Length: 233
Image (cartoon, rainbow, N blue to C red; front, side, top):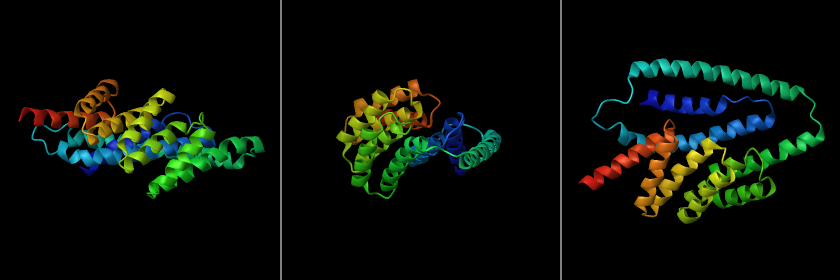
C-alpha cells in the first residue's frame, strides 16, 4: 500500500512539474500546485482503503510498481536538481524594482492565505484568498487561490458556497486542468454531502470520462462502484 501511495504522489507531482521553470513565479506556482496535489492525495488516501479491500484482481502488479517507482523517483530527483539550479540563478540575478513588485507581492499574499488555510484559520484564509483574487485575478496563482478559497468553505461544511467557488475554477481558469479536475472531484463530494447523489454520480462520471488517467478518476470510479453496490442490494 505504501508503495502504491508513493507512486501516485510522485507521478502526480512529476506530471505538473515537467513544464519549463524559468522564473521565481514559476517556482512558486509549481510548489503551490504540489500543495494542491497534497490535498487531492489526502482525499485519495481516505478512499483508497476501500478500493484495495476488493476481492478482484489487483490493479497493477507489485513488480511493475517497483519499476515505475524507481523511474519516477529518478526523474523527480533530476527535476529537483533543475529547480535548485534555477533558484540559484534567480538569486544571483539582480531584479529591478518593477519585477520585484509584480512577482514578490502576489506570491507573498498567496502564501499568507495558504498558511492560514493549513493552520485551520479558515475565516482568515477566505479573506486572504478573496483579497488576492480581487487584486491579482490574472496571476499565475489565481487558479490555486480559487481552489483553496473553495476548500476553506468546504472545511467549514458550507457546501453550498463551496460548490459555487469550486465551479469558478473551470469558469475563470479553463486551461488549469490539474486544478479543474481537483475542483470537479470536490464538486462531486459536495453534492454527496448535500445528499444529491444523482448530481454527484454525474460529476464522478464526467471526471472518469474527461480525466481518465488522473488520480481523481480512481476515486471517482470507486465512488461509482460503491454507489452501484448500494443500489443493487
